[in-house]
Length: 195
Image (cartoon, rainbow, N blue to C red; front, side):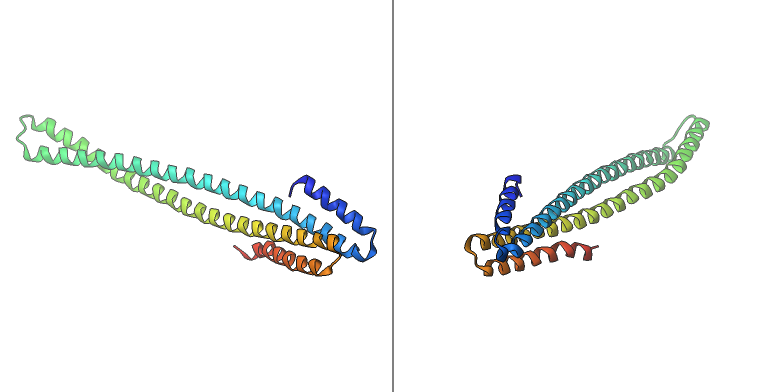
């Protein structure tokens, strides 16, 4: 709600206070204006939470991709070393002692890389799990924000319809505005039921 709209509604409410029959309408409008402001702030905050959670999910997704890339690089080195060692087994090599020394070095590297690969895979899977958690958080924050947006819209509709009562002096609009407002309040409160 724009500041000038709130001021205009306040002026209408003050004018209505002069007429005692419209005081409940003016009070309703005042309460609705406050509820609109509160749900607007809550909606903005939950939208911000959703954006922060999306950013965290993107960062974790990048980290998981980096971990998998690192894993792949080590896996490729491990396979290359294994292939070289196997090739040395089938080729005739003049320097047998040198070849055995190389093969021992390759075997030591292979053992270390096997351990490293298990750790890299574990870390990459943990990052993927964090991504899934963050995606759930994003979904929850977006659902909360949608409920607050609906609440804000219904409360604003209720406020506007209630203000028509001041112009027409017909209380049917007041009751109709209250119905919309109750829908908005229910939508805002439904956020508490979401996980």
